[in-house]
Amino acid sequence: MALITIGAYEFPSPTGYNSTTKSIVAGGQNLEGKFIGSLVKDDIHVISVEWGFITAIDWSAILANFRDASMGYVSQDVTFLDQDTNTYIEREMSISDRNSNLIGINADGVMGYNGATLALSEE
Image (tube, rainbow, N blue to C red; front, top):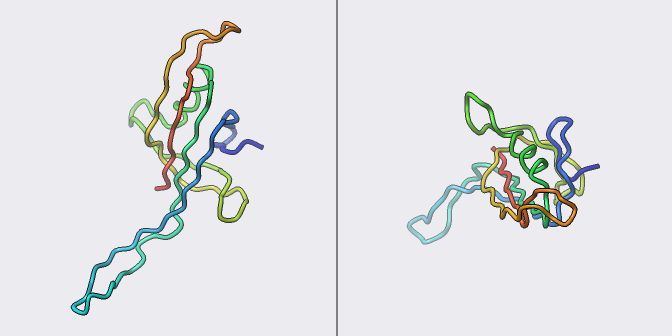
């Protein structure tokens, strides 16, 4: 099973997978200097993925999952490995930063990118 899937599309195996789980707390200090806060949202997931080499076709296919011709970039239901439970979960996520370095054609004659990265953030 792939680390990340969107519907039936399985992401190619990455060379790096970083998972972050965070909470958003709204708060401040009271007159006594003590922190008072309330939990706004818990268990927000952010995934950063990296490929040492990825073909231009695979990279384009990954990015196409988040593109809509009329709306630009959109969110998707993404299934991924949750670091907290070591199980696969599905969350609505949007694509954030995407970076790649075109290396042209490798020794096998395949055009691709070196060090391509992207981040997915839960809505």
